Image 1 (cartoon, rainbow, N blue to C red):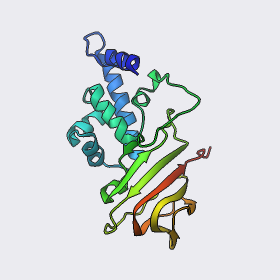
Image 2: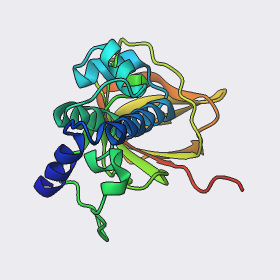
Image 3: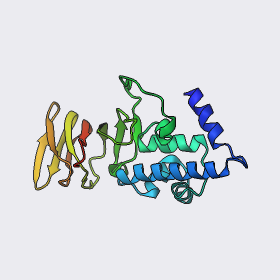
Image 4: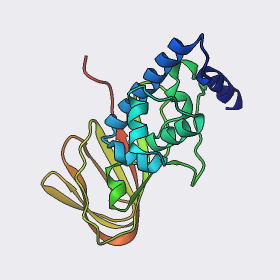
Length: 213
């Protein structure tokens, strides 16, 4: 990772000869960051707050109008649930056969439920341009909150580890207790209906599959 940072720092360093190259890199980074944000249906305010930068700065980054430090890019990558190297796909040489995420080390990412007292820890990170699946450890600890409805491509599988919850999918509501699982189409509106016993911890896996030709 140190070698990668050194390479990226060299590319990001401003120079008179490389100004056009720098501009292309800034536009590339902006497009990747904007694409990841829109895929997760997050607002500029959502991501900027978690990354501890201003909304104006994030807007400039997405539009290729600002040069970002590696520290800022690292925070944005963490919020969006990707590795720093994925923002620089041409520089990504971290190709391995397996990926280990130790307990308690999954990236905490921003999703729509974050504002409602949900915590999402991403347990695996796709390195390619397309995501095939996303596994989350979801924690909820506020029984008084109102919850949003979620809609997304693919199929979702949830498995309750702790607590009790009524979970809504379309017009149906399901009681989930520890050990229970629920699988459903992500395009149908879904989300928590009532938190019956907190804290709640559940494994949520979204499988995107292949896009139609």
